[in-house]
Structures are given as structure tokens and as C-alpha cells.
Length: 207
Ligand SMILES: Cc1cc2nc3c(=O)[nH]c(=O)nc-3n(C[C@H](O)[C@H](O)[C@H](O)COP(=O)(O)O)c2cc1C
Image (cartoon, rainbow, N blue to C red):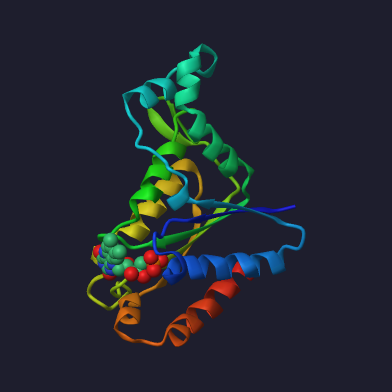
């Protein structure tokens, strides 16, 4: 049976557009995968910390040589990697913050991009260690950065996440972006704004 890892990164709770869309994805994914398992990881409640010198040293120490302290340093990374390993698919809600991803999502990325677990160096070149997974990103941006807006180059989310997930072996990535969400702060109708996005995301989840 398939397993979906549902990750959210918006701090905005019920007002969040990306959370709304990731929930739409999950609800429709469940219908398309009866008996499937959904694992939820809310990064705003996960209290992830920045990696530091001890973390890097522990990650680069062969597993069988790690001290008890080094194992403890990597415990959260191990937990997040176990969730990632178990997932066939990922649905990730992403807010645009300062033209990029929220800091909590970057903290998660720093914990799961780990030498010997998700990538390795083979003959001096990086090699992805994950395979067979696909990821769908449900993105909300205040402005509009789509093709033809003239602002495409300011959206660092999509090229960054494509590169990063490809680096660890998740090359099958799909983005759905709800651009212009700032209009909701100026009186735009939320249901009308969300409706076409819900339809598109429901179709992605059923694919
Ligand atoms: C701290 C912060 C930074 C933001 N930075 C940008 C930005 O650089 N570009 C943009 O278009 N919108 C920006 N926004 C607007 C958000 O992208 C927009 O509100 C979007 O709906 C956020 O996703 P969410 O509703 O899931 O939280 C920012 C919002 C916040 C709270």
C-alpha cells in the first residue's frame, strides 16, 4: 500500500493558502489510494534546529563508529529520514517567504540531505541515493511569478526545490502555485480564489 508524506511549512494556520492546497491534495490522494497511509509532518510544530559542527562531524563519521553523543545529535535527522524512506510520495505545502521557501522547510532539508543516507560521493562526484519517489509542491505566493509576468526570475522556490530534490534522487517533481494570494489580504473572495486551484490540485492527487 502506498504511503504519502504530507509536509506543511506555513506559519499561518487556517489562513494559509499552501496548507489549504496541501490538504486538498491529501483528501483527494486518499480517495485515489484507498488503504493508503498518510504521515503528517507539520514543520512549524517540529522544533527543528540548525545543523552545527557536531551534526556535520556525526554525519561524516561512519555509522558503526559513532559515539552515543553523535547518535543523539543525529536522532532527529534519523526520525525525519525514516519518514522520508517510508514515503512513496510527498505532498509539500510551501509559502513564499522573501522569494524563497520558509526557514522551517530549509531546516528540514538540512536534516534530510545527509551523506551516506540521501546522497554519496562516488569517485568525487555526488550520487543520489533515493529512487522511486515523487513529490508535489503546493506553493502560495503573494505576488504572481508565472510565465509572462516578467517576475519569473524572482521565484527561487521552484528552481531551488527542483535542484535539491533531484540531488537526492527525487526527480519526479510537480509544482502547483497559487500566485497573487496577497489579494486575499485586500478583500478578494477566498472561495473564488481557491476554487480553480482546488480543482487543479485534486486532479494532480488523483493522477
Ligand atoms: C514573512 C513573509 C514573507 C513573504 N515574502 C513574500 C515574497 O517575497 N514574495 C511574495 O510574493 N509574497 C511574499 N509573502 C506573501 C506570501 O507568499 C503569501 O501570503 C502566501 O499566501 C504565503 O503562503 P501561506 O498562505 O501558505 O502562508 C510573504 C509573506 C510573509 C508572511
